[in-house]
Image 1: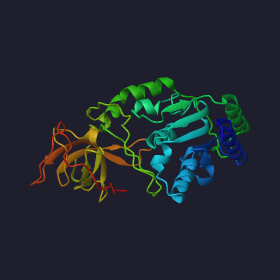
Image 2: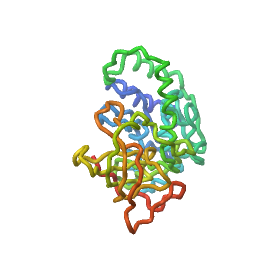
Image 3: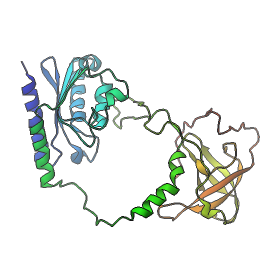
Image 4: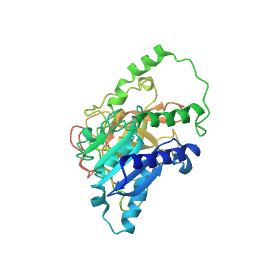
Length: 327
């Protein structure tokens, strides 16, 4: 009979293995009806993939076990307990809730990325009913000790520290105040679509509610420094309300043949642009390097015939289904 103590000791063994190869010392074990069906430890540096946490490694092994033994992973996970030496991050916590695990037992809290209450309670925030039981702080001191050993010795894979510059707090605050409308100009989204980069059938698409601010307004352009510049003429090559940007092909000589980026907040008037519309615009440098220009103060002058143009206050009737292929 495998006790919780034995399962957690196995997780610690995996965490120590991770520490020995320069990975963050976190170990994970999945227990189903007295059988360990999945084991894993952090392998982020090995794969050069920030998603390869201990929980992800254990889940992958559990999926293979289910496939080899002709079990449905949905049925198995309903009776599975996850043991991990550190509180799962928000990404792993979301996967645990989505996979409907019966129970979670973790060691020390994760004060930076914890997904079961330390930073964000994924289960409560997104209304999940699983896991039905969460046990925290199991052998907490031992878990903390392993992490202290790792960080006190220094992360061998951390980037070289850059020289710190003294921040001009007053100037930064002024920039933030002047550009407050930039954040508000981001188009509202109901959900964020998260799709695993792995193409196995068990990695399903997730649509968690978007954490963006619920109500955003279109604001006038902030690029007043371009107000005194010359007016240019162009034709809309591509514009998507859903993505919040588009491109204009110049019809004059500046610049020759290069499409100009336009953000949704820099389009004036009551109607959204459509491919083929003729517009006037001014040019403004794109921060932070100011090496390219973007269109601001964009005004529709000649609407393309045979197309129904949508008002900004109308819902999006034709969402973008094709990717923006512009470089």
